[in-house]
Image 1 (cartoon, rainbow, N blue to C red):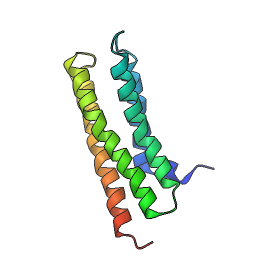
Image 2 (image 1 turned 135 degrees about the horizontal axis):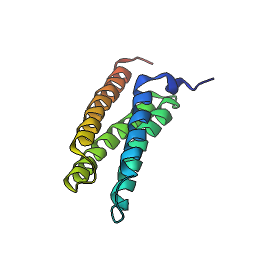
Image 3 (image 1 turned 120 degrees about the vertical axis):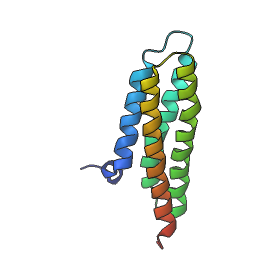
Image 4 (image 1 turned 90 degrees about the horizontal axis):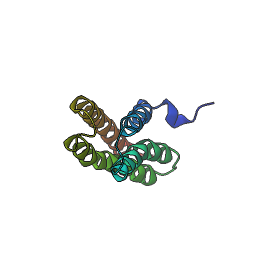
Length: 120
């Protein structure tokens, strides 16, 4: 039986995003492990905080973890930008990942706004 958060499209897309980032960063050369590690952790954090937030009982707790997930999206942006500037990833991969981040950001903002509108 799946956990409730696994049914959320935003969670599924966040896992897909993290998986894609992990694939891209596998090709980073020696000496850029710090950048790969930070990008990997930030991308995984998006899905992990969505899952954790969904397991919370109060709106305030849920909102807190959804905000952390949104912050992790923001963290990924400069890491992706540096990766393409250093020629560690191709510009088409960079754009694809930026587009996915934009979509995730909008979806998570929708989750947060939905919480704010609920009474319970």
